[in-house]
Length: 346
Image (cartoon, rainbow, N blue to C red; front, side):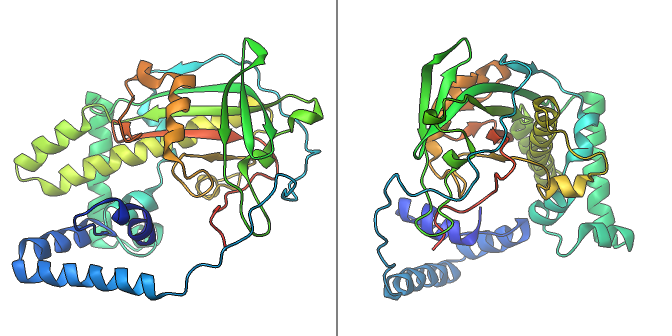
């Protein structure tokens, strides 16, 4: 979530007041303002002025409708990486100790728990607040390992796939002549005209390509435990527990993606650091529906039909959000030139 995403994509969908909090402390300040009648009126006026300012901005230039002939310069001659099998792999109760190295502490302590600046540098300097928050997180992780309070589960599978214009055709692993689903993704209206379909061999090449899907979760029972801690007055640990579960799920997605690259035939360099992995310095990408390159969250529906993550306790809500919240799904590409991009680039 970002402030811009909240203003442009979420706020217009609701009649009530929709606000963005960059972290827990900002959220607490907003909650206090909302409870104060005078401050609430000020907030409503701020939102009204933002809406008027947005209307006053010069209208976005209408771009010509792209034809299917428009394509990016992503190489169509890249090698095909063939996965070792097309079976669904289910990893239940994946060892938390194997996930912790993949957990992004900058995201956990910085984004979720409100620390500003480099977490690594502040820990090295012995900053008191940073050290105390890290100790809280470490204690939650230790308790989870000992008592099983966080139970990570995962699944992944490779599928035969090809592109056709802006479409990606997913074939039946048992019968590659049968299309299970066709995803249609948007293409950038300006150079470099990227679309996710460009990262697969086209149908008319006659060459079969492959994509992967993954679903992971680390959120079973976390909301209930967090509520119990909050009811006892332990607000920090309540919030930190949910943050840890979210980042453990992200870490497990990172771990599973690493495993997929290893078996897919393009393992990471031996000297690659975890910091480089968090910066996506590896070959290929993994994209989650609802994000810039594939903004249609409804694509979660067919992903769930393909993967059946209900088998690891992940459900899809009517709004196409995953339950438990600490869950991650993704589509994985192997193309050496695959890159992250925003389809709304102007």
